[in-house]
Amino acid sequence: MTKNVPISMQGWRQFLGIKYKYLGRSTKGCDCYGLLLLYAKEILNVELPDWFYEEDWVKRGHNYFTENYEGYAYRVDVPEVHDVLLICTDPVIKVPNHCGILVKKPNMFIQATYDGVISSYTDSLIFRDKIEGAYRIKR
Image (cartoon, rainbow, N blue to C red; front, side, top):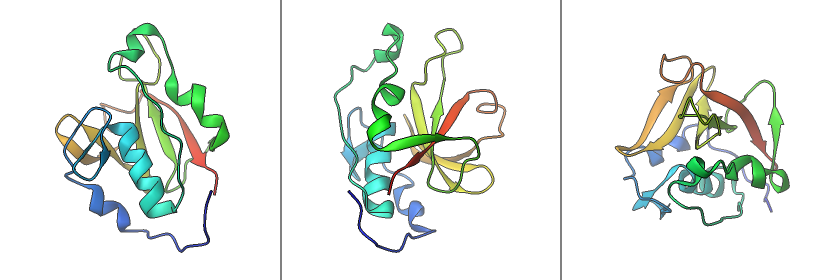
């Protein structure tokens, strides 16, 4: 699954500004999981599995991230750079429906939003209470 390749600590900047595209998997457009696939491949040299999901999957109570991560990631208590952050953006459903990647300690992460890929902070008012957990990709 992985190769012994040095990991770039600043390579994450190449993803900033990528446009949002539902089920997008390239630098021409991606959603949050597409960003994770690109990041894992380009920065970590890891090919992650892909799967189809409906655009409103969270409303049905599916938790695609935690239902599918066990083969390639594991939950961690203390996130490190390159860890995946699962985020619950719906306070009623409380199912992780978004992900980001920690790119700078202690709290900077990148995420794909409808405005494109941006950097954000886990301790901001928007995200402080919405992080479900951190997951480390197996290498």
